[in-house]
Amino acid sequence: MTSATEFKKSVEQIRKEALQEIKGANELGSLDQVRIKYLGRKGSITSLLKGLKDFSEKERPVLGQLSNQLKGNLELALSTRMKELEVAVGQEGEFFDYTLPGRGGWQGKHHPITQVNDRVTEIFYGMGFEIARGPDVETDYYNFSALNFPPDHPARDMQDTFYIKDDLLLRTHTSPVQVRVFEKRKPPVKIIAPGRCYRNEAINARSFCTFHQVEGFYVDTDVTFADLKGVLSAFVWELFGKDVSLRFRASFFPFTEPSAEVDISCVICGGKGCGVCKQKGWLEILGAGMIDPEVFKAVGYDPEVYSGYAFGLGIERIAMLKYRIDDIRLFFENDLRFLRQF
Ligand code: FA5
Picture 1 (tube, rainbow, N blue to C red):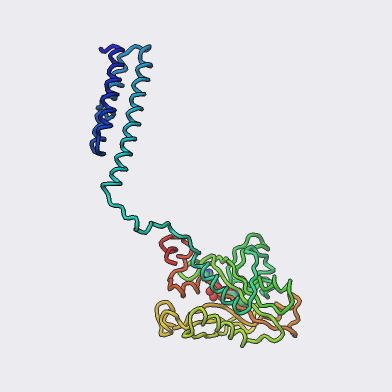
Picture 2: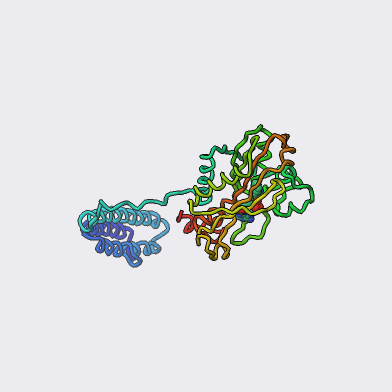
């Protein structure tokens, strides 16, 4: 058994030798060998620490402290020397091309739906429409009653609704913004209202439970269906190009009369028929019509004096055509591999 004095001598001896070897190591490999020799599992310091158990309780703390100090000293010396050698390798051993372009981080972008929404809004803004907004949580009155959906009328089933309370719901379309604007302003009003809508519908490749619409409406003393056709044609040609044709199909909405659904010739196949347009050559993009006199009566506009048109288009459907996306769900999954493509 070694005495405490001998133990202290060994500590100093190891310190001296190890520091010399660390200083003398000229490359990272040999420095690591030194580390293993002293601090490795079978290294000198490890066996020194193991030997502590043979000393008395009085001696052990002092000798333990000495050993730990030695360990700390050597670890510091090793890491200092390692940094020196690494710098040397970087300067002499490796070629570093400072002209290489840096690796940039990912640049944040607007969501494709926001991009299409902004583009649609911009086109109508350029045609003299002001922008208005309404709340996502609506009352039954604005979403249905004021838009000439009578209570318990089957037309309400056209839009499956998420109800919050009897009278409170998540808006199923952006048309309630018409009523909110009409209540506050006298004609002429020429407005677009972009916003989010919600429907308690079965989800599939073309329909989701939440989506975005842009509502447009113009009320003045002599607005005609020809004005509606003109403004929608200008919009479609601006967004998809002049080669695209429009088709107005008779339809029904309680708040417009006459009503139409508007199709455009398929932007994928040019109208010949393909999988996206289901061989029809046409794709529906919006609902529209002349505002029903009943809506004017509900807001105090005289239907004998004023006339107006309204339309509501689905942003996701437009985005699907613009970017040739065959499943609406991709817009809501937040998969970065998808989003980074826009
Ligand atoms: C309406 O919502 C009417 N408010 C549109 C309107 C406004 C008509 C003004 C007349 C005057 P519709 O339910 O057809 O109509 O929806 C309009 C558009 O919203 C559709 O053409 C479609 O592009 C989009 N849309 C409707 N439901 C969904 C859904 N579940 N998922 C994605 N887009 C949808």
